[in-house]
Image 1 (tube, rainbow, N blue to C red):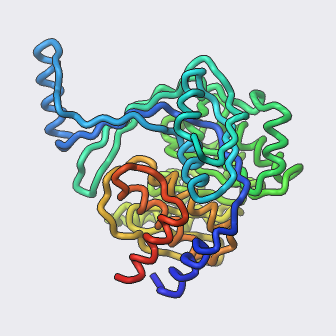
Image 2: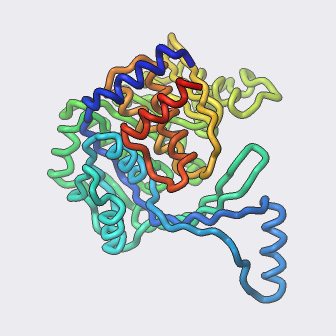
Length: 362
């Protein structure tokens, strides 16, 4: 990373001027993170032993209840960075109270929360793996599975019209109408709004039979401005969008390099800007340009939520008209701060400024 580019990020954080108006939708999860000190093999053996003796306990397992969902997490990170955020999300009455608790003292408008019958709940098992921490998400989608454009009212569409960025997340979680939701929202923004459209589908494989329709109707649409993907998502969509994907891919590539090659293929087939975030680097692609920036080296204390923090930094970077390299550095910094934070709280601009200044000194 170039010192001059990091200084560009530092100057942005010092100014505290850009405060974009951002709409995010549609998911909020009640999450429980269970940290397993053992690797998967050892823990599986422990669990099997408990089952064989007809049940019992495994003690000293660290567990934390916290805010979950791509939209909700991104809202938190954006608000901590000074953005004005309007989540259009669904949850139960209990979930709505938890939203108020999690978002207290943040500039987040919760008046667009949709009260539904069932909340979305995730239990995340976080394991130690050879490449770092890895998590297995056990999800109950609840009413999110049926979230559709028909749930939105005129007040919601007014918020969408006035937003600088309209962001849709978790396509697979909106199992029945995910493609229709993104398609209608993005088309509406381009027809009646003034903002940019931003999409992070999250892991599409739970709804894999509908991926071809998603690719055709949304990813290849000119209504999409920015597509954000991780390693697995880049590879998945490249397979569906390029008929000669297997011929182009070389055997023996590390997953990050395979993801970069996949992203190149994907970027050539869509009109949107493509942004890739991995554990080792982030990159931004157009048909003519590629910029790659290495990740910050920090002690990783959590695996969940890194992509949401990264997206928040990315959106702020776009809104601030940063150069591509500076935008990626900002995004990487937000994610690095979050995953290395002891309390798991997203950084404020002041905290992120100190983080970047300390890195510049090393």
